[in-house]
Image (cartoon, rainbow, N blue to C red; front, side):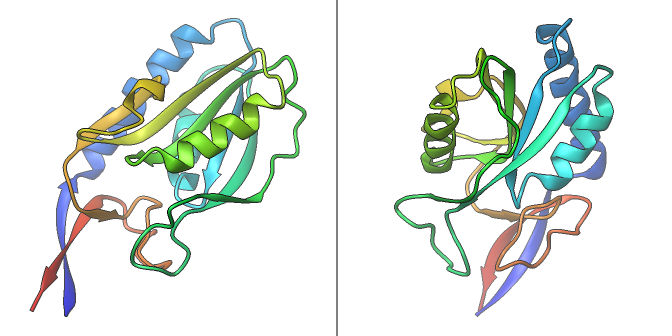
Length: 174
């Protein structure tokens, strides 16, 4: 079986989603210097665009969580494989995620970071899966998408397709 890619979010729609999210963050974090924590690897493109769209002082760090590895299916549990380096105690923290769907990665990251005693801890995702189990935990999101494995704009399938400027759903073909 091969995989066919079907465009579901255009470059223009991504730019609009980033602007929408940035505007809300700008409003809510006014007068603060947030720490943006990107969840690697999938969020790196979104986080770069989001950071450039924010007209405010901010700091950037990354956490790496493994939920797929080189597998076709996600693990039942996410594992933190790289921790943040910035001390976030008493800081305003915004976790930047590529997609929120099952909630396993989000739960792991938020629980871990909450243990570091930030003043506030909010979550931002570029994509939210329709019917997302973790929807109540997402403070900001760009677009809602349906079912299917998505790639592009930082999202990958076995480390491939991250460099695509738009987002595609993978469809199996015979």
